[in-house]
Image 1 (cartoon, rainbow, N blue to C red):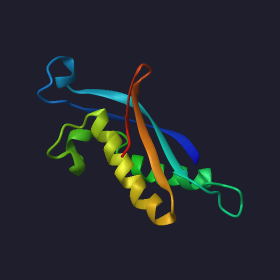
Image 2 (cartoon, one colour):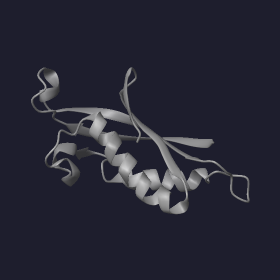
Image 3 (tube, one colour):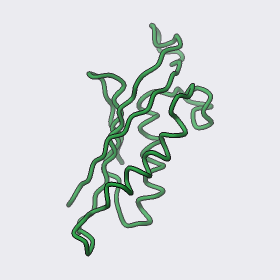
Length: 122
């Protein structure tokens, strides 16, 4: 199995409700996102996927989150915009693009700081 991973960043603010502590106040992060896709075989060019394609897919998704107040993004209307939920959102949106092209999404990892990350995979 081959796996390709790219990294992109975005900045956003959020409030996490009902968890206690300072995260219930408005705060922001410079998120680092890692997106990994996989496939058992390479294409005729010897690639799993062109890095540029995966970067574009990811950029298009993150553009809707960058410099936003996540609590006001439709996806988070009824859920806390936690890093876990951000990872799930990105995973689902990448899967919409990757699966029809024959790629699996291995995982999406969201770093909210240098020492705190979450990963989502199915």
